[in-house]
Image 1 (tube, rainbow, N blue to C red):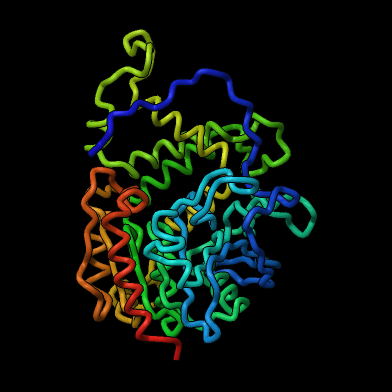
Image 2 (image 1 turned 90 degrees about the vertical axis):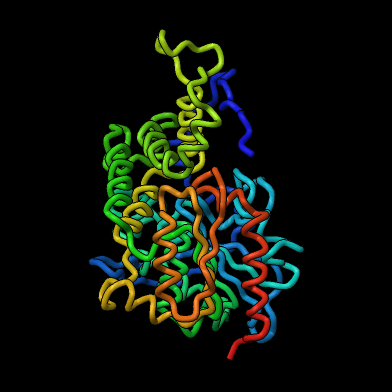
Amino acid sequence: MIQHRLAPSRTRTPEPPRASSAWREGDPVGRRQFADLGPLALEGDGLLPAVRLAYETWGTLAPDGSNAVLVLHALTGDAHVTGDAGPGHPTPGWWSTLVGPGAPIDTDRWFVVAPNVLGGCQGSTGPASTHPDGRPWGSRFPHLTVRDQVAAELRLADALGIRSWALVVGASMGGQRALEWAVTAPERVRSLAAIATSAQTTGDQIASFHTQLTALSADPRFRGGDYYEAADGDGPHAGLGLARQIAHQTYRSAQELDTRFGRIPQGGEQPLAGGRFAVQSYLDHHGEKLARRFDANTYAVLTRSMITHDLGRDRGGVEAALSQITARTLVVAVDSDRLFLPAQSARIQAGIPGAAPLRTLHTPYGHDGFLIEHAQLGPWIREHLETAVHHPTD
């Protein structure tokens, strides 16, 4: 049931945020580990001369490596899948209900690896990282594709000595990478779970992503992407916040926003006198919150990687690519999703040989249902992962 809670009213003026909230050398490390993976030639033009991935792990890798699980995060997620907030981790784990001791992905049994995506801002090589000339990459950071990101993750698996994954699981942008893993390296993915995602970005999705990028770049404090030396409060927070507001409307359903907020004014504000409705305050809150924990360039780099996402590129089309997947596959749709539509999940399920019947999360929360509806999603993932027990590494 949707609870009618209004976004919090501002009671004090917060400290101005840093120009970028990317993790930088010298910041608390927290649970992060790092793997230096060498140079990486990119799918488009470009080369990253040195790639580092930050990652976290939980559990113990079996001697034969058969119990490894790869968890891939969404656009503004990171490697901190489970655990408390603390030094180095400004927010608690984003999937703690599904990953941990006794959870559906039980870390007493499975060795879980979660990398911060290439291009990310929480320790992996990205726009806030140091260029060989000693300054941040900023506007010089090259375009990345989902395949580039998976190429880096393949090297991470090699560095960890993991020949194959019992499960590769991802939702949203993480689901795109999970699908790419299963096509790029089918022999290394024994089970696959693709949740609320797509095999190919649609025109409607590209349009939404484009408006977010436009909002971001229109902020004069974005400075074309070179803002890392700006003073606190002088970064592209308005543009990043606006991009997040546009995106957040696709993360939640119309039903939820109307039921939860409707036309209720925010606190003592009067809309007829220029004040906000509660839903406006809610979006302002989420835009400001992201600006205090993320990096604008990373938002742009990862959004562009989703724009170009096409599993069928140079593979004969989407259906031909899906037909190459050999992993035991679970596909989950969200019935109220207006970012990655249920029909896109149905296309994935129909195209993968032997995929389990499509599962559908029933939720009023829209796309974010994969973060909320753990009582539905958890048992499906637990059941699917159990099949890996009977198929150890070859």
